[in-house]
Amino acid sequence: MKKLKYLFAIVVAFSMLLIAQPVHAVDTDPEIKATNYNLLVHLDTKKNQLQESATITIQNNTAKPITQVMVRNIASGVLTYDQKHYKGNKNKTTVIKQITANQQKLAYEFKGDESNILVDLPTSLTPGASTQINVEVQTDVPWRKDRFGYQAIAGGKIYNLSFCFPYLSDYRNGKWNYHPYNDEGENRNLAVSDYQAEIYAPKSYKVVTSGESHTKDGKTTVVAKDIRDFVIVASNKFKVSSTKANGIKINNYYYAGKSAKIYNQLAKQTAVDSIKLFTKKYGPYPYSELDLTESPFSSDTGGMEYSGLVMIAQDTFARKKAASKEDYDSVIEDVSHEVAHQWFFNTVGNDEYTEPWLDEGMAEFSEDIIFDLSSTKTSALYQKLMKTKQDASLMRDVKKMLNQQMKTAIKYKQGMIINYPLNKIPKKYDETDTAYNGGKSFYSLLRYLMGEKKFDQAMRDYYHTYYLKQATGKDFIAIIKKHDNSKAVNDLIKRYISPKYLQ
Image (cartoon, helix red, strand yellow):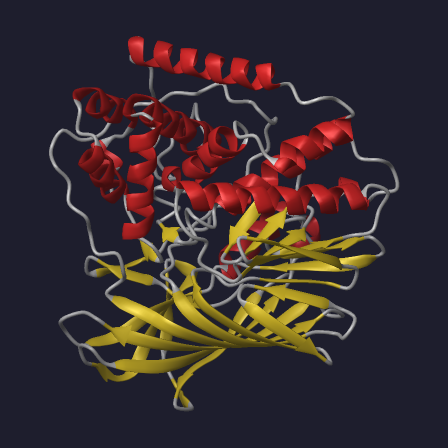
């Protein structure tokens, strides 16, 4: 997710420590894994309600038989939060209708809260074997400008449908991984799986999803391979415009408005340049297409990332008045940040509740350092819209200022701990301070100390090693030390990464 800030705000925030001893990579896939999801989803736009059926194929990769699995229904955590904080959502609920295997009802219990469902399997699942369970859920969609909710826009409606589909929790190190819902940050911990889906919505709605989809007569059929998190966005007022980058189709879903043409140009060009830059720096984009959806959020957030789809938090361009310079800036920030998440979180996964610095910090770094400090067609378009000329000397001055900040930070050993889990961040800080800004500072300083060439090699190694898998902080540090185990790099790590919270 993108926290709002100003474009080119690259003044570096600093953090603290890490490890003195060698570290070792952990298993990148969960020991009990969902290999496939088959979803049947009905969206009722009159009741603002979802009817969901999720058939989950589960494989036991442990060395012993298992008799239970944990299914997560994060919608319960979202709606519990909304009931307390939004008056209009007090009666919104999500209900497990039944859980079955081969049409046999399975017993289940809630663990901690109703987001976590411990399900009894009908028979013991032996090592290496697979089974299927089906989870049927009825979920109300809240009225909210967010990643899960619906709202009015452009004379119609938009439904952002994420954090509302049942999925198998991660089983690692002999236990199920599940986190309490955190509205300020994410709490996903998902392995890559294949999805097939049938989605039913009114014919007037354009339905956008992860993966490749086809819609006819209100039925959308989806095939999505290697997806970390599935999402649906539906609106009866979407316009769509497409382009390509590196052979990847980019679809931009947006709304009519006084500045809609400008939004469409900026969003698409930023996505094109982001894909080209991040492919060059890190490695290939894993999907055949990328969807952008104009999805107004509350004022303190800027977007949300999913496999092959990003929500861009805009609505000013759909209004009757012209957009401002700040609105132009915001589009570029949001799109470059969320597209960066296609590399970090969606392709190279991590537990975003316990180690958000791995994905949010890297997305901030990619946005501010890689994208903003590169000469792109986006920056040329921006200058054209602002009716100003590109100033190469200004970019040189910004880079010079950044290098001076790096030099000062190293000299005076500046830093702060950035690898707090969301529930352990000290009260004087928040996730923006630690994972976002602190993470960006850490990666920027690593790049400065290692040199751009060596740092880029390390990042490509990290991306290739954990491509469509899940990495931890230990894994990342091990890759960095493989490429540069100097005292300077180790000292920097110690100032930013606490071994207490290192996964």
